[in-house]
Image (spheres, rainbow, N blue to C red):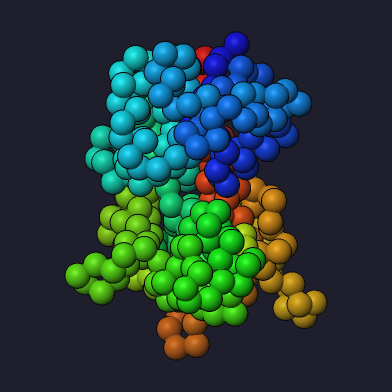
Length: 325
């Protein structure tokens, strides 16, 4: 039986990962690690698991570890664990743009993982849903993507959720520079010299690394007063543009995509519709009004589940399955 460690087990993504394992038939011994909540317990597959301090991680030598902690924790412990044979899947930004580390959404580029890879990076939550949708149409050749994201506050952590639910204003904010309740903030992460934020550049760089470095990508990322569920409005330019019905069939036939595109019955992607599911919802698929080689669509997914925990879980079970063959 494999021993699986969850590092950052009591955070928002760590909680979701425990739920994913609990809903699966994956048979393993689970270890939980966190700093501030060490000594508490979480439940995985109807078993109480005591949360241990992260400082004890190395001595347990797990077969695999999923990191849902911060970048500093990943950089401190992953090199030592991976060198000793532990498969490490990291949800932070620490290894995403490392040329020696695969950045993986399994159905999109799982074949990029080599047998010797003991460090695998989990992409940004927005990137995961975008590349899942783009993967359905990549056979037509993707030239350019213009994306506007509408990102839930849970992507910024538990304190950000408090800013929303407690309706914090100036002077009481824990996570944002402006109130998020009843507001929209076109600012996620720090601004760079080029005028784009780190979050926007993550979408650009990570999508190019996963799919194709030649794809032109432009992104504006916006925080919206929604608890869970990121959205993307995307204009996609193709080398060869099929008709809209063909595009719909392509999305329907792509694993983990839920086509929600029936405007006559007011059906389109919304965070509330996919919350708690592993699906990327795609809809509002329409041809660009002015260009014959472009179409627009709207994409949404649960950022904590599909955009983090479930993707890490898929990487884990597929790599372990491949290594048993």
